[in-house]
Image 1: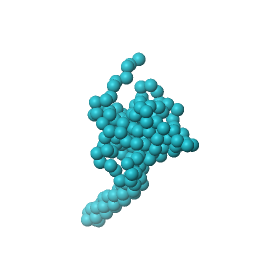
Image 2: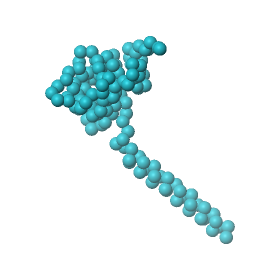
Image 3: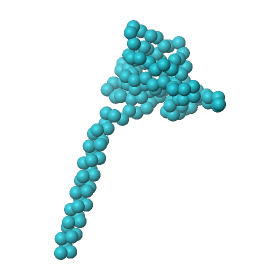
Image 4: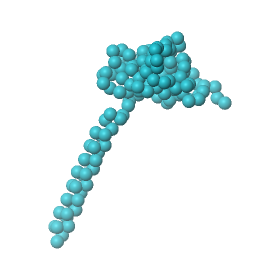
Length: 148
């Protein structure tokens, strides 16, 4: 009787580990295309990612680089003070998007140009994504906003 209980307990433990391993594997498979890594323009310039890799890039929209094309196509450069990366985007830009303002874009880096599928801009006068602030501080170009 005692051996049967021990055998049953071991079977349940093994079954639980197998179920956990399968569930972790399925979650990893589901997330593989949904995880976007953040990179600063300097990181992209140093180690260009593969053209099929989707990631986020953030920094300041470089002054004098915003060019509105035909229709909804826009091109500009994003900089962190150390490097500038050309960006193209087709779509409607956020209302607060402008030069010398923080932005984060999601997309792919193809042939030396970041092709954005989504552009996010600051939502008030002091907001900037944490990753962008960290990248700008690393480059020594971040200026603390004046407090209210």
